[in-house]
Each structure stands twice: as structure tokens, then as C-alpha cells.
Image 1 (cartoon, helix red, strand yellow):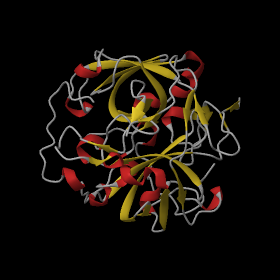
Image 2 (tube, one colour):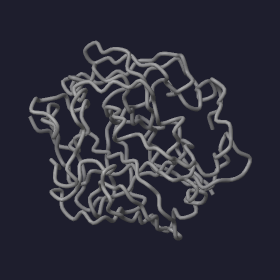
Image 3 (cartoon, chains in turn red, green):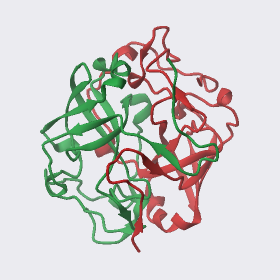
Image 4 (cartoon, one colour):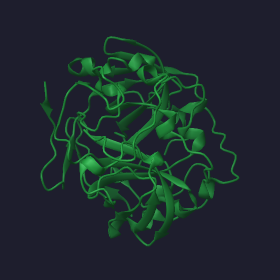
Length: 166
Length: 166
């Protein structure tokens, strides 16, 4: 069955609705790690039951991309001081959560699925985060070689496991 | 200066607004490639001038992640037949553009920036697509090893350069 989504013709306001909720051990911004790839904590993605059918075949993927709302970020600045730097940087050259459209993106490990519940690891997401989309992580699409990382070049990207949220 | 974003307290409807427009040689869905990593066409990201300041420091990154609206996708099904397969698959186990929240994600090559205009390559994005966010592509965050790709396993992911849109 085809279901409607809400995109106004003039594409001015775009209206999204959560398709689920992400549960994690991180109850506050302060205890949430910067990036999940060093985290050993597990979490759960609760996809609302009306979308469960869309999770078929996801089980075979070891990693998935979660797109979600940074729901605690209700404002933004175009220059920010990132965790790894003392200089002000352009917002779009950082992964700072306070953005004009506060969409978070995390690659997480998919441990298992039971009905509408996904068990995940390597998560850096705040408990109670509204889920917007799930995509399979596909190296051919999502990985690039010979990558340069601008102001991050030469910095040791070695986050503490906790507490570097803004 | 801090600017407000619109997240209603109850996080039911989420309202986003485009921060720019993506220009590409692909004028119709039919001529747009499935995935950009095999495309040699170039395109331009026009970020609206009010956000130009946020592009500072982006130049040093060789690759960026674009999040955008699949603005031609106004409905969805929870089971879809992906381009690479003859079976119906769960929507969230595919990169199909028709989704409950039709957010597109592409890793593209950043060639240059001039003021609010980014010149990009390896693009698979339809001309006129509304831009939602730009993030720097950072291998430590965005790449994973030992990846399994479920129903795609063993399939030769070898898209034609054009025409596999839905």
C-alpha cells in the first residue's frame, strides 16, 4: 500500500514525523560520547509498529545508518568551536549538533532484530532521540578512499568515551 | 548570533527548511544515476547566502555528506523491489528514495568552494533538489570494517551510470 508523505509543493516548510525512538544508556548530553565508533554501550531502536514491515531483510546487514533529530538542539550558530579544536570553525565543517536542520547521522552496528526492535552497538545517541530514517550501510556507496579532512588533519581523533557534547 | 530552529516541544511534526539547492546535470529521475560513486558528472551546491558563513573551513575536506530532500517522492511502500534485485525487500533495507521521511544521503567529492557555491563531483542527485544539511566526511566516524551487506551480499554492485531511479 502506498502511503502519503507531506512535502508541500513549494518545498518551503518540510514536515517530517518520527518513525521510532532510539533508546540508549546516555540519559544526558553530558554523558553521551562524541562519536559512537569507540563506544561499547548497546542501545535499542524502537521502530513504531506501523513501520515494522519495512524492517524486513535488514537483519543481514552488519551496520546501518541512523538519521535522527538532535531534539535538544533548538538553536544554532554558523561558527562553532568544535570539541577537537580551539578555533571557531564553520558549522558545516563540523559535526556539531546545533544546525539549521538538526539531523544527526550515525553509523551503528546492528546486533539483532526482534519484530520492530533493533538491538544496536557502537552508539553515540542520546536516549529518547526521535528516529527519522534507517538506511543499510553499504561500503560501495558510503566509503571513499584518499580522503582529506581539512582542519582535522593531523589531529588525533581520539575522543574520550564520554562527555564532549555541546 | 544564535538562531532558532523549529522543533515543537512534543516532537510530533518536525519542520525543516531547505538551506540551499543542489544543481546537477540530471534533469529527470530517469537520467539520474543510482549512486554517485561511479558518476563523473559535476554539480553545484548553492547554499543560500544567509548560511554562507557556516561553510568556512569546509574547503579542506575532500569529501562531504549531503543530506537532502527526495522532493519527487511523495509516497512510499514498506516493501519495494530494489534495482539490484527481483524480490520485494523491506524498505529500510534499501536506499529507495520513497520513504516515510524522504531524506537522501550522498557522499560526494568536494572540488572547490567559491563563496556560497560548492563545486562537487561523483554526484547522483537530481537537479533542483532541496539541501537540508552538509557534514564533513570523516573516515573515523563514517567508515566501518568487516561489513556485511545482507541481501546485497554476492551481488555485483555495478550500477549503470544512468537510469535506475524509481
